[in-house]
Amino acid sequence: MSEQTSQEPGGGWSLFESSPVSRDLLVTAGPLVLLELLFFIGPVLIMFYIATMRMEDLVLIPNYGIGNFLSVFTEFVNRTAFVNTTTLAVLTTVTAAVIAYPLAYYIARFGGRYKNQLAVLVMIPFWTNFIVRVYGWKIILGSQGVLNSALMALGVVNQPIEWIINSSFSIWLGLTYLWLPFMILPLYSSLEKIDGEIIEAAYDLGASRYAVFRRIVLPLSLSGLVGGFIFVFIFSMGAYIVPAMLGGGELFMGTRIAYEFGIGGDWPMGAALGSVLMIVVVGVLWSLLGYVNLEEMFQ
Image (tube, rainbow, N blue to C red):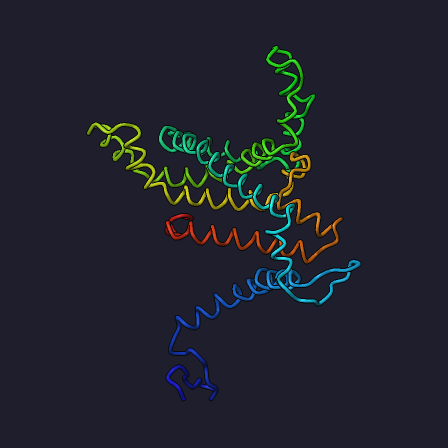
């Protein structure tokens, strides 16, 4: 009998009796692995499987191939949706980072005893229903909305500005607004850990604000920045409500997938779009995690 087993008083054998670490690992990791298989790996494999099929008269035909994956990049509608989604996701992520850095820095450095209250203010939008917030922007940006009415009343424009709604601009604005807290909070968490005396010492030695940010603040807050990038980029790539409500028919991956699984009646094409989208997101996630310690990001 292997050294990994030992005989119990009742005569039976207990596996991993001499290896409590292995036994604890099996007990703790087993349920987690099972949940991953049931609720993540399984659905993903089903999605890839459906993407290799074709559909006729709302019936899946087991005619396997990679044609649907190729159509994601060869068909104009799908290619345009992919380019639009990626471009707006990157733009939203960069915009959120530019806006979030000074806000998070102010809360961390100058919030004082009000840090927690200021952090709560960042989370206040989460207290309102997601769709209600998006619909609020629809009211603000509409042809007869708050913004256009104010500009016309002030004499800035003579007629409503049409391009601020049902356009890529409105999608970008809506995504930035919705996901901005997910950039601020990780940045705040990282910036709050920076010792203020280090920054003061740099200023005392004659460093400029730019030098302090580039040599001290940015490197020490990189884990929070990467965390914010991951959240905002992933959420933006998979967005559906914002482009559906504010996009006015602009081609976007989320709306394309919903169309193919709904009115379009082409589940394999929708599964292929979702599969490609997931591969891109996983690739970006993997590349970003290479620049930061995962444990530091969530400390």
